[in-house]
Image 1 (cartoon, rainbow over the protein chains, first blue to last red):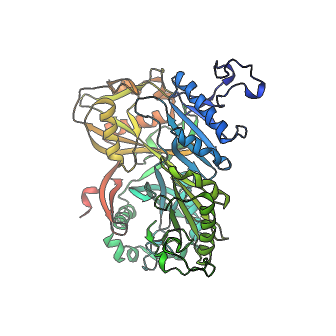
Image 2: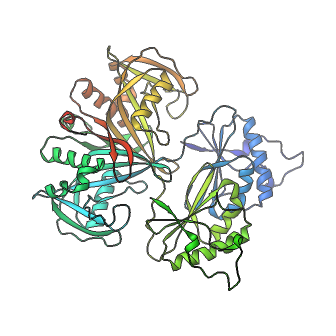
Image 3: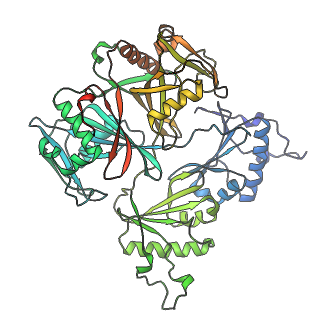
Length: 294
Length: 294
């Protein structure tokens, strides 16, 4: 969503009831930015301090104006320090779109037609690391909280991708943080999509193959009970590995990969011209050396 | 995160100052649920109506109690109709974790050690559909909004995965909604991860191969200008296809796939014993017929 600044000063509005307005009260319409989807965004972080009743009447006047201009979605970004205004927005029909630690984003859909605004973020992204050394030992950990605590199960290191972090960077970081082992990213072996994992949201869990480049383990002690190198066959023979669908599926792709019979997805750096962003395109690496990505 | 009900009635608390409490005022500690991560969740949807000053003092007493019990994260789920209480929570140090249309989730971390609570959802998930018929024509569309509007570019149908929706179902639904074409899911060819795509969040965009089972196009008119079957070579020869990294990468995997030289990821239904959920594990289909998934 690209946002362009709204030159409000040129908007002709008629809310002054004929009274000559001073510089401070040029318009009751709230300062806002317009976007290419007929949306309007009010950033209350930048707006001057105002009482709830003033905000209420200005918001009402603003929506009336934007309705005439055939605007569609109205967004209000309300900082945590201005929560005294939230009830005014809710009373005018705004609902919540998303929140970050220090602000709440509210939204109101003006047209009579069904709302086509983008939903808020729907997925958390997790990573699991398959790190196997030259002696066919796999790097495994035991966690000290969560549903697997105390079960004696050895599992691959896992973690959550941070905001703005690439999957291939996240998995290398997690292995380093949890076990002290330095690795190089090889490929994405597989992934699992699950629903209603936390707060009703979904989860995408990427199983990644990494190549270890250091071997001495330093166990992170806040979240882990222990970490070690374990013979791969011993890991795969654990009861849970044989019974749980996810554990079993991970072991199966590992076995195929270790036999040289499996192709995962490789990250290819890529620049999208239209959006101007650099990022990774993950694809089968089978014929990748034949492709010219220059 | 698994949440278990907190039997508050058995908690010994000392906030009554020696006064005998009636049924209605048994404890100033707010009703809450405990989880296996030493977290506490206060659901204000179910709590009786209370004034902000009463909520403030009860919240203060509650946190004091939970601190003694070595609890870590305190969550407050505040429904949109009770926003009169939000400032009280903020004044006690709560910040926002996430919001859905009708509630705001606030959170407070009690311990002195760094916060290990899970972040809110970080990614939106999109799908793009590669639908090629027997005459080597690809299904393409032109959109009537966004950054590509008016550029004359024909692109593959795309859309956003709904809350709780599987990727392989979402892409079939989007193609049907946008073009009226019925399809069968074949495989995930590749995916792209991008950052700061909307409201600072990231985006995972899965490019999927589908097999058409109907052929007559009915263009959806709210979001699309047009839709048609286009000779694949003509699609690939568009100026944008040759210049933009994403468009180019999609075309390259399509070419390899159409030549029978590419293996994507296939969805395998899977049940995880520990979490009790059914979902899909996406993996290379190369040796899949050799694997026993019973």
